[in-house]
Image 1: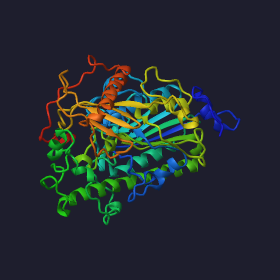
Image 2: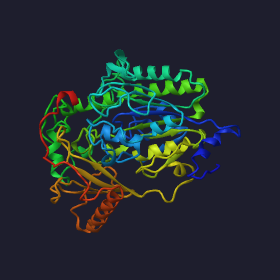
Image 3: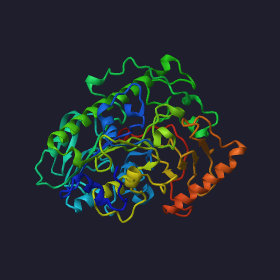
Image 4: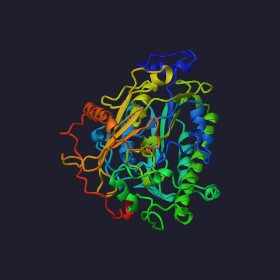
Length: 495
């Protein structure tokens, strides 16, 4: 396989021009909401079959260890666009707009002559459905949207409730946009799916697809003896397995059949929403084939964050546990690797790496400020200088008081997490330390074992170093005060 120098982004896409004048590649970016890393058959899911999504990875690059830097919809989406951590772009919750002053990779591509569009769930700012900078065509809605009959705002010109299932509706809109004549200009289309975000409502044709599948609680749901007390306190909250998200309450632990019936229904519906997403990917793939643009299009399929499906007694994201932070990321583009020579990347890549990588592949100028790194060299030739550690951050939310402030460092072997109180005083929650190489399900918290004290100390120092490198020090790391785990329900409009 011919190799290319990472710094020469133009060479990457010029490689597939066959000596003729190179065409700049198009970008089709498909973003799902709360899709776990293992919610696709390519990752080994025994029940959920996603052949169309899998094909993106089987004909391109499968990033097996991809992670978000904040496991919350809006902060993660802003990091994908900007290549920056949340403390820098400022979108630290689901109610904050993407700041006007920050560049994004669509803005750069637009400035380079790309026809740019966003269709679907934007979800940075609950009450704004007007166009955002960087897009020539912008179709979205306020807040979460609905699985059926969502009101969309079309480029700020009109609002219309579009009848039908969300995934199908945005795919129809995407197909219509892709068929527009654009005089040979390259294009960048981002599609934001609602699926598989709760509350999970599948299409009728898929509603009973997993009816016969048993999905008991994961074993780790009941292995909380060595975990911080806040995790047990969370069990009966909106984000706990015994909370009001379900129609029942049981004493902990209780994995009797009658106790898990609603939990099973939740998992079945979650998977079923993704069957529609898989069909959507198949439709768009075929359209690109028919138009002759498939091999000149970078197809990105990824999720904004993961989700805990009962692990550690939780049914949400936000925490630094693996199902929360680990995401799906697949990229198909023959300029990176030919379709018959797919690549599996095992190194840790982050949401903040996406923007610099796409800009390099498109031969566009780099962002002037970026925490992420381009993975082009990593994909094509390997990169010995690639990161071996990174940090994760989440800030306590008064609207969802079920998770403390989180600061975490992850290496390829270890994960260390602390929970700052927010006022500079000593942490009031037990730390967590896992050897994720041998304990990927995070069953055994090693923080209290004396022989691992040097490991914890070293990781704590590494966390401080990484944060300082990104501009976060004890003086600059502004976070809210941890007011504790509360039973109060979130407002209905933001659930």
